[in-house]
Length: 357
Image (cartoon, rainbow, N blue to C red; front, top):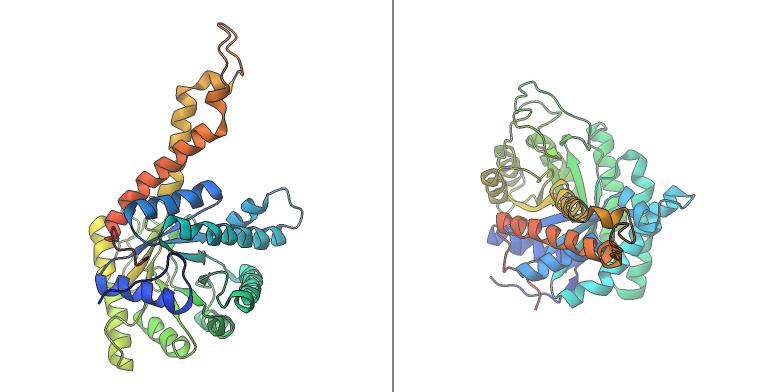
């Protein structure tokens, strides 16, 4: 079945259509962390270039950076910076001719107030426009006990669902720098710390699906960042087992869980494809795009080193204004980020599959 949506930020039923198309077509959307207008615009440029829809997401620190790190009230900066970034996307997304999902990334227990504040802005936006400001938020309480994790997810989803918002939750701990988990030990797939247990996925489904839409970041050996292979075995079969348990227990359609792949940077392409076949519709990418952005700047500075030391060459009087104009190297950084995202769209099978009409 073919679907079509208007270009721009998608929320509510349109977001669910986007997910349905991805799962039926066995492809996924890259969820790219952005920190400013350069990275936001690069993501939309890459999506337009590949004729693919995309997810743009912000962390709390990205929100603060967007507002300005000099603001005294850091919490307020995290909130208004995220809102400002979202409005930037709303203003431009339609012009890029693709569908864009607006999402916020990991929010632990201490960041619940940040998410709640953003939901407040979406409630205002809903009253004014009939749609929320953000498509979805993530509540990552995987470091807490599962009872608290699910009860808070339930409480927040009850507030979000009436305005057409989705909630992403995490069960199990995705390793790596972001969550402070890492070991050289051989960790088996029955370790609940690093591998989500299917029984927990079933519990989440039974509690949350009657309330509204949620997606699930399940841990199957994936890690944030890029690390030397061998610490944790990537085991996508856990995703399959979780889908099967929910489907058979609750008599649902096949692959009822909408799954998210965290720590996508540096992952094996075969494992990415396998995860998608089990119902993954979203893969996070941050480390690789950060590096692509930074490398382009570093290469340019190295090539034009004098321009970053002198405005005018002390030996021959050559002016360097054109070389140190920030637009020069920031554009190269955007182009490098676009190039890395070309690879991501290809890996996820989403090239040419935008629903935007």
